[in-house]
Every structure is written in structure tokens, then in C-alpha cells.
Length: 187
Image (cartoon, rainbow, N blue to C red; front, side):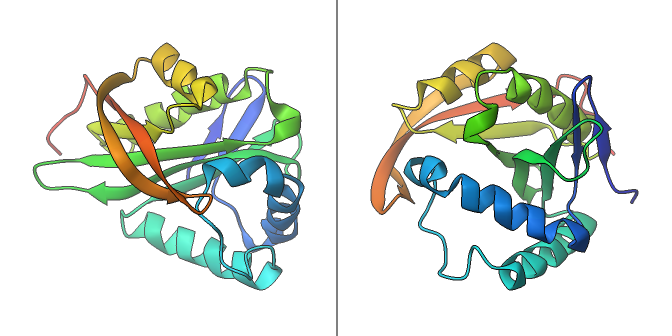
């Protein structure tokens, strides 16, 4: 399968390569405190090049084996400045054809509409190229920015999960949402 190279007016979304590892480490280092309230506690070696070299290789293998798609977001024209990421993971095929969506945007890139631009393009790729029928995205109730974004994109609230994920060292409730592919085809 050809590797995704998704371009929008201002952004480029693609799988990372080994050459991107220093920039990935810098992205997560710069945003470590900002991301902490929304993330599980990372492993101790999370901010090392060795960890991310392994992750980049794993991400490529998972894409090639139809398990996930983990994209980094770059500003168009800059293949070095990472401003976010979009992850589709937990692919389930058979009668389901669904996955989970997660995303991050650098603190410095907030409020500029980047995620509103990146997610529709990434979801379109997942629907058309990967034949995903259903994308599920869940968010912590007090993360209204994420809730508003998902609603704007057409995600529908389906439920409320108590103590759903261990985030920032605490079991956090989540609002469950989904978005379905109206053009899904039996491949």
C-alpha cells in the first residue's frame, strides 16, 4: 500500500520517518506540560530518540498490517516543524470496520483552525483509502475544545463512560462519539 501523503491548504499529514525523530522528540518535549492533563502517563524513556525511533518503525509496521495510521501534522512547506498528530488506531475489520481517533495540537498552534483543517482530510483518507466505516473519538467532559471540534465535524455523542481511561494518573470519565462513512463499500 502506498504511504499516505495528505495535503491541505496549510498542512501536510504523513507518517513519520527516521529523519523526523529529533523533531518528534522536540514536539513532545515542548508540549509535555500542555498535553499532560489529556494523556496517559508516558514511559520514562518517552522523550528519547531511541523510544521514537522504535515508535516510527512500529507505526509503519502497523500501517502496513492494517492495524493503525499515525500521522504527524506539518505546516505546508516545512517538513521539519511538527505542530500536531492524528492517530487512527485499534482497527477492527470483519463485521465492524471501525477504529479510534486521537489527536494533539501544539500549544503554540492552538486557535488557528489547524485541527479543523487536518481532521477532515485525515478522516476522508481513512474512509476512502482504508475503507473504514466508523471512527470513534472519546473526550474528557471538561475538554470542551475537543468536544466542540468533534461536534463541528459531525461526530455524534453516543454515550458517557465512567472511569474510562487512566489519564494523567487518574481514572477519567469520557464522552463517547462516532462518525460514520456514508459511502462505505464492501471491499
